[in-house]
Length: 432
Ligand SMILES: Cc1cc2nc3c(=O)[nH]c(=O)nc-3n(C[C@H](O)[C@H](O)[C@H](O)COP(=O)(O)OP(=O)(O)OC[C@H]3O[C@@H](n4cnc5c(N)ncnc54)[C@H](O)[C@@H]3O)c2cc1C
Image (cartoon, rainbow, N blue to C red; front, side, top):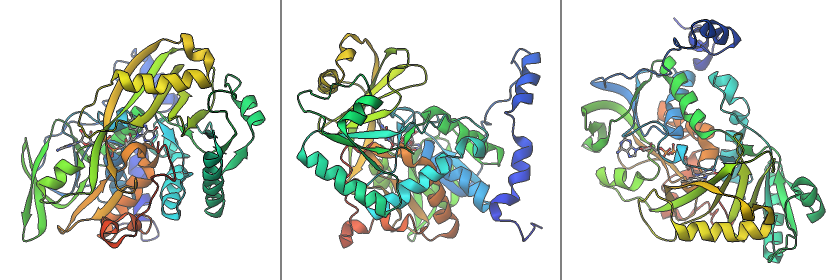
């Protein structure tokens, strides 16, 4: 019998702690065998015939959901079905920016909840996700930008989200390589010090390992090809490895949510477009903060390996392509060289793309659906990495209880019918 004084989550803490592997002692122990005996991070089980909950999509959001289901709600008969490899979707393709300084109250609640969890995530998972709250600075290049950061910064104050207005002189001190008097001169900025970056693969791996330790089955190369729905109730999923029954199903398939919704006979108000990013050759430390520029649509940060990570806007057409294209490179590099002339001799190393599912109001859909016990957590568009822990946390609570968590409730699909949109489209501008 569980101790009634414990929360459902803490019931599993001792079991989980026993399975923790990473510490100075495990490092020393494994060094004695030349690091040949480390255990696999997660098992590779065959699917069982039935689960209490199936999560479709082994990205950060799906894995986080599975982890919190087990850890916080004691629901361990859970499978995460991933059609390829863990984190191979947008989780492993993004530019890793974490922040919560969105305009509207609903977004502030969601993204700030995520930052609260980011701050302790490495300890919670016993896995270094390399969360680096180095600060995220948005530049303003014209009067409209100044008004936008003013409006958003004040909204952040009201929502208890940290925001600091920064003068051009302060920006020059923080980012000495910047050229303030470029074609669109820098007039000011707004800084969120709690924002920063995290290592995206580690987030997927950390959640996967922790969920697996709690009994969750993580099944890669398992593609969901259809749903088993009877009388409006979900009964299971059809996969390339057979039919698997489920009490509840959560669809967490960024980039392909329209495809999954179609299998369930629904149309989501979503467009799927490519979003590209680039990294340079590694350099010595040159910029220790994330700098974003909405007007010229380019942003930069430096990874721990020294590579400069660049990105811009999504491609202006719908496609499932996950490749880079020259026009986007040109579009981002031109303004970046104006802003940082020192980058003109930089060699680029890699370019790639991901498919982002974008909603009408640029806010996600975290929601029940017309099919009973079929839930969606999709539509995070160009900016869902930062929300990973918060999204997984509130979605797990919603799946466990069958009712949407208060932070998730405003992100219901119904808002597209009622008109209660959470319009971050122009508000948060570059939505990474
Ligand atoms: C280039 C780029 C830069 C970005 N930069 C940032 C940033 O700086 N900050 C930020 O906050 N966000 C950013 N994002 C957005 C962010 O990456 C995503 O919002 C977030 O990672 C979504 O996570 P996820 O777990 O929902 O999706 P994913 O990681 O894409 O996981 C979904 C998974 O579902 C699987 N799947 C799909 N169909 C099926 C099926 N039928 N059966 C089984 N599995 C299936 C896919 O293979 C995939 O692994 C960026 C995105 C891109 C592409």
